[in-house]
Length: 423
Image (cartoon, rainbow, N blue to C red):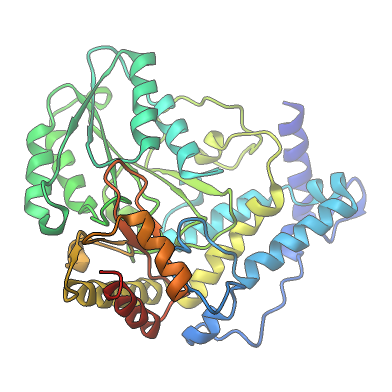
Protein backbone atom coordinates (compact mmCIF):
# COMPACT_ATOMS: atom_id res chain seq x y z
CA UNK A 1 0.00 0.00 0.00
CA UNK A 2 2.90 2.36 0.71
CA UNK A 3 4.16 1.77 -2.83
CA UNK A 4 0.77 2.51 -4.34
CA UNK A 5 0.22 5.55 -2.15
CA UNK A 6 3.65 6.93 -3.00
CA UNK A 7 3.03 6.34 -6.71
CA UNK A 8 -0.32 8.10 -6.52
CA UNK A 9 1.15 11.10 -4.74
CA UNK A 10 4.09 11.25 -7.13
CA UNK A 11 1.86 11.02 -10.18
CA UNK A 12 -0.18 13.93 -8.89
CA UNK A 13 3.03 15.90 -8.41
CA UNK A 14 4.27 15.02 -11.88
CA UNK A 15 1.08 16.40 -13.38
CA UNK A 16 2.13 19.83 -12.18
CA UNK A 17 5.84 19.22 -12.75
CA UNK A 18 6.63 19.32 -9.03
CA UNK A 19 7.20 16.60 -6.44
CA UNK A 20 8.30 17.47 -2.94
CA UNK A 21 8.89 21.05 -4.04
CA UNK A 22 11.51 20.05 -6.65
CA UNK A 23 10.89 20.41 -10.39
CA UNK A 24 11.20 17.01 -12.09
CA UNK A 25 12.31 17.26 -15.69
CA UNK A 26 12.83 13.51 -16.01
CA UNK A 27 9.23 12.35 -16.23
CA UNK A 28 8.46 10.25 -19.28
CA UNK A 29 6.57 12.92 -21.16
CA UNK A 30 9.65 15.16 -21.00
CA UNK A 31 12.26 12.52 -21.88
CA UNK A 32 14.47 13.60 -24.78
CA UNK A 33 13.49 11.50 -27.80
CA UNK A 34 15.12 13.16 -30.79
CA UNK A 35 13.75 12.25 -34.19
CA UNK A 36 16.17 10.36 -36.42
CA UNK A 37 16.35 12.34 -39.64
CA UNK A 38 17.99 9.36 -41.34
CA UNK A 39 15.03 7.07 -40.76
CA UNK A 40 12.43 7.01 -43.53
CA UNK A 41 9.54 4.72 -42.47
CA UNK A 42 8.34 4.55 -46.08
CA UNK A 43 11.68 3.07 -47.25
CA UNK A 44 12.19 -0.61 -46.41
CA UNK A 45 15.96 -0.29 -46.74
CA UNK A 46 15.81 2.47 -44.16
CA UNK A 47 13.67 0.29 -41.90
CA UNK A 48 16.19 -2.55 -42.18
CA UNK A 49 19.02 -0.14 -41.39
CA UNK A 50 17.49 0.47 -37.94
CA UNK A 51 18.56 -3.05 -36.91
CA UNK A 52 22.11 -4.14 -36.05
CA UNK A 53 21.50 -7.63 -37.45
CA UNK A 54 24.34 -9.23 -39.45
CA UNK A 55 23.70 -7.96 -43.00
CA UNK A 56 25.35 -11.03 -44.52
CA UNK A 57 22.71 -13.35 -43.04
CA UNK A 58 19.15 -13.67 -44.36
CA UNK A 59 17.29 -13.20 -41.08
CA UNK A 60 14.34 -15.56 -41.45
CA UNK A 61 14.38 -16.54 -37.77
CA UNK A 62 14.49 -13.04 -36.30
CA UNK A 63 10.91 -13.41 -35.04
CA UNK A 64 11.91 -16.16 -32.57
CA UNK A 65 13.48 -13.60 -30.23
CA UNK A 66 13.62 -10.25 -31.92
CA UNK A 67 16.47 -7.84 -32.33
CA UNK A 68 15.83 -4.26 -31.22
CA UNK A 69 15.51 -1.45 -33.78
CA UNK A 70 17.39 1.76 -33.06
CA UNK A 71 14.56 3.66 -31.31
CA UNK A 72 14.09 0.75 -28.91
CA UNK A 73 17.84 0.36 -28.31
CA UNK A 74 18.16 4.08 -27.67
CA UNK A 75 15.27 4.02 -25.20
CA UNK A 76 16.73 1.04 -23.35
CA UNK A 77 20.12 2.74 -23.17
CA UNK A 78 18.56 6.00 -21.97
CA UNK A 79 16.59 4.32 -19.21
CA UNK A 80 19.51 2.12 -18.19
CA UNK A 81 21.82 5.12 -17.93
CA UNK A 82 19.26 6.99 -15.84
CA UNK A 83 18.78 4.05 -13.52
CA UNK A 84 22.53 3.57 -13.14
CA UNK A 85 23.15 7.26 -12.47
CA UNK A 86 20.47 7.95 -9.85
CA UNK A 87 18.33 4.85 -9.46
CA UNK A 88 15.69 5.82 -6.91
CA UNK A 89 15.14 9.28 -8.37
CA UNK A 90 14.84 7.90 -11.91
CA UNK A 91 12.29 5.30 -10.82
CA UNK A 92 10.24 7.93 -9.02
CA UNK A 93 10.34 10.41 -11.86
CA UNK A 94 9.14 7.69 -14.25
CA UNK A 95 6.16 6.67 -12.18
CA UNK A 96 3.89 7.06 -15.18
CA UNK A 97 6.10 5.17 -17.64
CA UNK A 98 3.89 2.07 -17.57
CA UNK A 99 0.87 4.24 -18.32
CA UNK A 100 2.74 5.58 -21.36
CA UNK A 101 3.42 2.03 -22.55
CA UNK A 102 -0.23 1.05 -22.14
CA UNK A 103 -1.31 4.15 -24.05
CA UNK A 104 1.10 3.43 -26.90
CA UNK A 105 -0.08 -0.19 -27.04
CA UNK A 106 -3.71 0.94 -27.00
CA UNK A 107 -3.09 3.41 -29.82
CA UNK A 108 -1.50 0.65 -31.90
CA UNK A 109 -4.28 -1.86 -31.16
CA UNK A 110 -7.19 0.54 -31.40
CA UNK A 111 -8.39 -0.11 -27.85
CA UNK A 112 -8.43 1.52 -24.42
CA UNK A 113 -5.31 1.52 -22.21
CA UNK A 114 -7.46 0.29 -19.33
CA UNK A 115 -7.87 -2.99 -21.25
CA UNK A 116 -4.15 -3.77 -21.12
CA UNK A 117 -2.05 -5.48 -18.46
CA UNK A 118 1.72 -5.48 -18.92
CA UNK A 119 3.57 -8.79 -18.64
CA UNK A 120 7.02 -10.20 -19.31
CA UNK A 121 5.95 -12.65 -22.02
CA UNK A 122 3.11 -14.50 -23.69
CA UNK A 123 3.62 -17.34 -21.22
CA UNK A 124 3.27 -15.04 -18.23
CA UNK A 125 0.09 -13.59 -19.71
CA UNK A 126 -1.36 -17.06 -20.28
CA UNK A 127 -0.46 -18.04 -16.72
CA UNK A 128 -2.18 -14.96 -15.30
CA UNK A 129 -5.19 -15.60 -17.52
CA UNK A 130 -5.78 -19.29 -17.00
CA UNK A 131 -4.80 -19.28 -13.33
CA UNK A 132 -7.03 -16.30 -12.64
CA UNK A 133 -10.17 -17.43 -14.49
CA UNK A 134 -13.01 -18.18 -12.11
CA UNK A 135 -13.64 -21.81 -12.99
CA UNK A 136 -15.49 -24.46 -11.05
CA UNK A 137 -15.87 -28.22 -10.99
CA UNK A 138 -18.25 -29.33 -13.69
CA UNK A 139 -17.20 -26.66 -16.15
CA UNK A 140 -15.08 -27.42 -19.21
CA UNK A 141 -12.06 -25.93 -20.92
CA UNK A 142 -12.16 -26.59 -24.67
CA UNK A 143 -8.83 -26.34 -26.46
CA UNK A 144 -7.08 -27.86 -29.48
CA UNK A 145 -4.33 -30.27 -30.37
CA UNK A 146 -2.43 -27.50 -32.16
CA UNK A 147 -1.45 -25.33 -29.18
CA UNK A 148 1.98 -24.65 -27.74
CA UNK A 149 3.25 -26.03 -24.43
CA UNK A 150 2.60 -22.74 -22.61
CA UNK A 151 -1.13 -23.03 -23.26
CA UNK A 152 -1.46 -26.76 -22.63
CA UNK A 153 0.49 -26.58 -19.38
CA UNK A 154 -1.33 -23.49 -18.13
CA UNK A 155 -4.64 -25.23 -18.81
CA UNK A 156 -3.49 -28.39 -17.03
CA UNK A 157 -2.60 -26.36 -13.94
CA UNK A 158 -5.91 -24.48 -14.10
CA UNK A 159 -7.77 -27.79 -14.29
CA UNK A 160 -5.95 -29.19 -11.27
CA UNK A 161 -6.80 -26.14 -9.17
CA UNK A 162 -10.43 -25.71 -10.21
CA UNK A 163 -11.66 -29.18 -11.04
CA UNK A 164 -12.73 -28.04 -14.51
CA UNK A 165 -12.00 -30.58 -17.21
CA UNK A 166 -9.87 -30.03 -20.31
CA UNK A 167 -10.94 -31.39 -23.71
CA UNK A 168 -8.84 -31.17 -26.87
CA UNK A 169 -10.06 -31.29 -30.45
CA UNK A 170 -8.42 -31.15 -33.87
CA UNK A 171 -9.46 -28.23 -36.06
CA UNK A 172 -7.95 -29.65 -39.27
CA UNK A 173 -6.29 -32.84 -40.46
CA UNK A 174 -3.77 -31.42 -42.90
CA UNK A 175 -2.52 -27.86 -42.27
CA UNK A 176 -1.82 -27.13 -45.93
CA UNK A 177 -5.46 -27.79 -46.86
CA UNK A 178 -7.11 -26.30 -43.78
CA UNK A 179 -10.02 -23.99 -44.52
CA UNK A 180 -12.15 -21.57 -42.51
CA UNK A 181 -15.40 -23.50 -42.84
CA UNK A 182 -13.88 -26.73 -41.53
CA UNK A 183 -12.13 -25.00 -38.64
CA UNK A 184 -15.16 -23.04 -37.48
CA UNK A 185 -17.57 -25.95 -37.93
CA UNK A 186 -15.41 -28.30 -35.89
CA UNK A 187 -15.07 -25.83 -33.08
CA UNK A 188 -18.74 -24.85 -33.14
CA UNK A 189 -19.76 -28.52 -32.87
CA UNK A 190 -17.40 -29.05 -29.93
CA UNK A 191 -18.76 -26.25 -27.72
CA UNK A 192 -21.05 -27.79 -25.14
CA UNK A 193 -23.30 -26.45 -22.37
CA UNK A 194 -20.50 -26.84 -19.82
CA UNK A 195 -17.83 -25.11 -21.94
CA UNK A 196 -16.60 -22.08 -19.99
CA UNK A 197 -13.31 -21.48 -21.83
CA UNK A 198 -12.36 -21.83 -25.50
CA UNK A 199 -8.57 -21.64 -25.62
CA UNK A 200 -6.94 -21.28 -29.04
CA UNK A 201 -3.83 -19.93 -30.73
CA UNK A 202 -4.11 -17.28 -33.45
CA UNK A 203 -1.16 -18.47 -35.58
CA UNK A 204 0.17 -21.97 -34.98
CA UNK A 205 3.93 -21.85 -34.61
CA UNK A 206 4.23 -25.51 -35.64
CA UNK A 207 2.49 -25.23 -39.01
CA UNK A 208 1.90 -21.55 -39.80
CA UNK A 209 -1.90 -21.99 -39.88
CA UNK A 210 -3.73 -18.78 -38.90
CA UNK A 211 -7.09 -19.40 -37.29
CA UNK A 212 -10.05 -17.24 -38.37
CA UNK A 213 -10.45 -15.78 -34.89
CA UNK A 214 -13.28 -13.33 -35.74
CA UNK A 215 -15.37 -16.18 -37.18
CA UNK A 216 -14.54 -18.37 -34.19
CA UNK A 217 -15.58 -15.48 -31.96
CA UNK A 218 -18.95 -15.36 -33.69
CA UNK A 219 -19.39 -19.11 -33.19
CA UNK A 220 -18.67 -18.68 -29.48
CA UNK A 221 -21.10 -15.76 -29.31
CA UNK A 222 -23.80 -17.91 -30.93
CA UNK A 223 -23.19 -20.64 -28.36
CA UNK A 224 -23.52 -18.08 -25.55
CA UNK A 225 -27.03 -17.04 -26.56
CA UNK A 226 -29.29 -17.37 -23.53
CA UNK A 227 -26.50 -18.30 -21.11
CA UNK A 228 -26.01 -16.64 -17.75
CA UNK A 229 -22.85 -14.51 -17.55
CA UNK A 230 -21.18 -16.97 -15.17
CA UNK A 231 -21.68 -19.79 -17.69
CA UNK A 232 -20.76 -17.86 -20.84
CA UNK A 233 -17.93 -19.38 -22.87
CA UNK A 234 -14.88 -17.10 -23.01
CA UNK A 235 -12.68 -17.04 -26.11
CA UNK A 236 -9.05 -16.82 -25.00
CA UNK A 237 -6.26 -16.42 -27.54
CA UNK A 238 -2.51 -16.89 -27.59
CA UNK A 239 -1.88 -14.16 -30.14
CA UNK A 240 1.89 -13.95 -30.26
CA UNK A 241 2.50 -14.88 -33.91
CA UNK A 242 -0.39 -12.85 -35.27
CA UNK A 243 0.36 -9.78 -33.18
CA UNK A 244 2.19 -7.19 -35.36
CA UNK A 245 2.14 -9.57 -38.33
CA UNK A 246 -1.56 -9.19 -39.16
CA UNK A 247 -3.36 -5.88 -39.68
CA UNK A 248 -6.29 -6.38 -37.32
CA UNK A 249 -7.54 -4.19 -34.49
CA UNK A 250 -7.93 -6.19 -31.32
CA UNK A 251 -11.61 -5.38 -30.90
CA UNK A 252 -12.22 -6.85 -34.37
CA UNK A 253 -11.01 -10.28 -33.25
CA UNK A 254 -14.22 -10.94 -31.26
CA UNK A 255 -12.25 -12.56 -28.44
CA UNK A 256 -12.42 -12.01 -24.70
CA UNK A 257 -8.73 -12.21 -23.81
CA UNK A 258 -5.48 -12.16 -25.80
CA UNK A 259 -1.97 -12.74 -24.52
CA UNK A 260 1.14 -11.85 -26.50
CA UNK A 261 4.79 -11.01 -26.19
CA UNK A 262 6.09 -7.88 -27.86
CA UNK A 263 9.53 -9.35 -28.54
CA UNK A 264 8.61 -11.23 -31.69
CA UNK A 265 6.95 -9.64 -34.75
CA UNK A 266 6.74 -6.22 -33.06
CA UNK A 267 10.52 -6.33 -32.49
CA UNK A 268 9.91 -4.91 -29.03
CA UNK A 269 12.16 -5.16 -25.99
CA UNK A 270 13.03 -8.69 -25.04
CA UNK A 271 11.16 -9.77 -21.93
CA UNK A 272 8.00 -7.71 -22.50
CA UNK A 273 4.41 -8.57 -23.33
CA UNK A 274 0.80 -7.77 -22.62
CA UNK A 275 -2.52 -9.34 -21.71
CA UNK A 276 -5.63 -7.71 -23.18
CA UNK A 277 -9.10 -8.22 -21.77
CA UNK A 278 -12.45 -7.05 -23.09
CA UNK A 279 -13.74 -7.27 -19.51
CA UNK A 280 -11.82 -8.38 -16.43
CA UNK A 281 -14.75 -9.53 -14.32
CA UNK A 282 -14.14 -13.21 -15.06
CA UNK A 283 -10.60 -13.04 -13.63
CA UNK A 284 -9.28 -12.97 -10.09
CA UNK A 285 -5.98 -11.16 -9.59
CA UNK A 286 -3.09 -13.42 -8.57
CA UNK A 287 -0.08 -11.17 -8.10
CA UNK A 288 -0.12 -7.83 -6.23
CA UNK A 289 0.23 -4.93 -8.64
CA UNK A 290 2.29 -1.76 -8.26
CA UNK A 291 0.40 -0.07 -11.09
CA UNK A 292 -1.98 1.83 -8.83
CA UNK A 293 -4.85 3.59 -10.54
CA UNK A 294 -3.97 2.62 -14.12
CA UNK A 295 -7.35 0.99 -14.72
CA UNK A 296 -8.79 -2.52 -14.75
CA UNK A 297 -5.99 -3.99 -16.83
CA UNK A 298 -3.33 -2.41 -14.66
CA UNK A 299 -4.71 -4.35 -11.69
CA UNK A 300 -3.53 -7.52 -13.46
CA UNK A 301 -0.05 -6.16 -14.17
CA UNK A 302 2.27 -8.09 -11.83
CA UNK A 303 4.02 -5.88 -9.34
CA UNK A 304 7.59 -6.08 -8.18
CA UNK A 305 10.67 -4.49 -9.68
CA UNK A 306 11.14 -5.48 -13.31
CA UNK A 307 13.77 -4.84 -15.95
CA UNK A 308 12.35 -1.33 -16.23
CA UNK A 309 14.64 -0.20 -19.03
CA UNK A 310 13.08 -2.87 -21.25
CA UNK A 311 9.48 -2.53 -20.08
CA UNK A 312 9.44 1.25 -20.51
CA UNK A 313 11.07 1.00 -23.96
CA UNK A 314 8.10 -1.00 -25.24
CA UNK A 315 6.56 2.40 -25.91
CA UNK A 316 9.12 3.07 -28.62
CA UNK A 317 8.47 -0.35 -30.20
CA UNK A 318 4.79 0.47 -30.66
CA UNK A 319 5.63 3.94 -31.95
CA UNK A 320 8.23 2.55 -34.38
CA UNK A 321 5.67 0.18 -35.89
CA UNK A 322 3.10 2.95 -35.85
CA UNK A 323 5.38 5.22 -37.87
CA UNK A 324 5.73 2.56 -40.55
CA UNK A 325 2.02 1.72 -40.45
CA UNK A 326 0.41 -1.46 -39.16
CA UNK A 327 -1.16 -2.08 -42.57
CA UNK A 328 2.15 -1.60 -44.41
CA UNK A 329 3.99 -3.95 -42.06
CA UNK A 330 1.36 -6.65 -42.54
CA UNK A 331 1.37 -6.19 -46.31
CA UNK A 332 5.17 -6.47 -46.41
CA UNK A 333 5.11 -9.70 -44.42
CA UNK A 334 2.27 -11.14 -46.52
CA UNK A 335 4.03 -10.27 -49.77
CA UNK A 336 7.21 -12.10 -48.80
CA UNK A 337 5.45 -15.05 -47.17
CA UNK A 338 3.34 -15.55 -50.31
CA UNK A 339 6.44 -15.31 -52.49
CA UNK A 340 8.22 -17.88 -50.33
CA UNK A 341 5.30 -20.31 -50.29
CA UNK A 342 4.79 -20.09 -54.04
CA UNK A 343 8.49 -20.62 -54.65
CA UNK A 344 8.89 -23.55 -52.26
CA UNK A 345 5.81 -25.26 -53.68
CA UNK A 346 7.60 -25.45 -57.05
CA UNK A 347 10.78 -27.04 -55.68
CA UNK A 348 11.10 -30.80 -56.27
CA UNK A 349 11.36 -32.68 -52.99
CA UNK A 350 9.81 -29.90 -50.88
CA UNK A 351 6.39 -30.26 -49.26
CA UNK A 352 4.74 -27.05 -48.18
CA UNK A 353 3.02 -27.39 -44.79
CA UNK A 354 1.57 -23.89 -44.36
CA UNK A 355 -1.63 -22.93 -46.22
CA UNK A 356 -1.01 -20.93 -49.38
CA UNK A 357 -3.93 -18.61 -48.65
CA UNK A 358 -2.87 -15.42 -46.82
CA UNK A 359 -6.25 -15.54 -45.07
CA UNK A 360 -5.18 -18.72 -43.28
CA UNK A 361 -1.53 -17.87 -42.66
CA UNK A 362 0.65 -14.99 -41.53
CA UNK A 363 4.44 -14.66 -41.32
CA UNK A 364 5.37 -18.25 -40.52
CA UNK A 365 6.11 -20.61 -43.44
CA UNK A 366 6.81 -24.28 -42.73
CA UNK A 367 7.93 -27.03 -45.07
CA UNK A 368 9.58 -30.45 -45.29
CA UNK A 369 12.59 -31.28 -47.45
CA UNK A 370 12.77 -34.87 -48.67
CA UNK A 371 15.66 -36.77 -47.12
CA UNK A 372 16.74 -33.90 -44.84
CA UNK A 373 15.53 -33.51 -41.27
CA UNK A 374 14.57 -29.99 -40.18
CA UNK A 375 17.53 -29.46 -37.85
CA UNK A 376 20.08 -30.55 -40.45
CA UNK A 377 18.39 -28.26 -42.96
CA UNK A 378 18.84 -25.23 -40.69
CA UNK A 379 22.49 -26.10 -40.12
CA UNK A 380 23.18 -26.39 -43.84
CA UNK A 381 21.25 -23.24 -44.72
CA UNK A 382 23.31 -21.23 -42.25
CA UNK A 383 26.73 -22.76 -42.93
CA UNK A 384 26.45 -23.06 -46.71
CA UNK A 385 24.11 -20.21 -47.66
CA UNK A 386 24.10 -17.75 -44.72
CA UNK A 387 20.37 -18.14 -44.18
CA UNK A 388 18.93 -18.24 -40.64
CA UNK A 389 15.90 -20.50 -40.31
CA UNK A 390 14.39 -22.35 -37.34
CA UNK A 391 12.82 -25.67 -36.40
CA UNK A 392 9.23 -25.97 -35.14
CA UNK A 393 9.35 -26.72 -31.36
CA UNK A 394 7.04 -29.74 -31.45
CA UNK A 395 7.22 -33.53 -31.75
CA UNK A 396 6.60 -33.09 -35.49
CA UNK A 397 9.48 -30.93 -36.62
CA UNK A 398 9.37 -28.81 -39.76
CA UNK A 399 11.77 -26.38 -41.36
CA UNK A 400 10.40 -22.93 -40.51
CA UNK A 401 10.94 -19.47 -42.00
CA UNK A 402 9.67 -16.06 -40.93
CA UNK A 403 9.79 -13.19 -43.44
CA UNK A 404 9.44 -9.86 -41.68
CA UNK A 405 10.34 -6.19 -41.86
CA UNK A 406 14.05 -7.09 -41.75
CA UNK A 407 13.97 -9.21 -44.92
CA UNK A 408 13.31 -8.38 -48.57
CA UNK A 409 12.07 -10.12 -51.74
CA UNK A 410 15.59 -10.69 -53.10
CA UNK A 411 16.47 -12.60 -49.95
CA UNK A 412 13.33 -14.68 -50.36
CA UNK A 413 14.43 -15.68 -53.87
CA UNK A 414 17.86 -16.52 -52.47
CA UNK A 415 16.23 -18.73 -49.84
CA UNK A 416 14.05 -20.60 -52.32
CA UNK A 417 17.13 -21.34 -54.43
CA UNK A 418 19.10 -22.53 -51.38
CA UNK A 419 16.33 -24.86 -50.20
CA UNK A 420 16.26 -26.38 -53.68
CA UNK A 421 19.92 -27.28 -53.29
CA UNK A 422 19.29 -29.17 -50.04
CA UNK A 423 17.46 -32.02 -51.80
